[in-house]
Length: 64
Image (cartoon, rainbow, N blue to C red):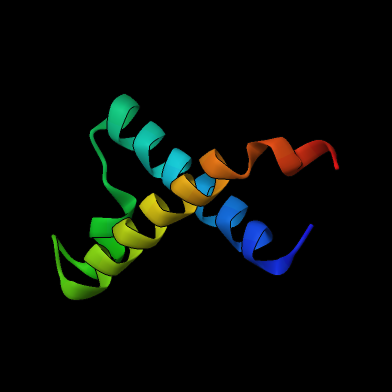
């Protein structure tokens, strides 16, 4: 497993935890840490989205 996929997995897990917190407790952890839609929060959200796309398009490589 290459480093890009490992980083993508980490960010997807961060995103999943954040969405779980939003769904269960109406608490956005990324916004709490970096500020509501600040530049850093938008960067984190963008990286999580890109990570999801990377994993979506490379899911067949999981078993190789």
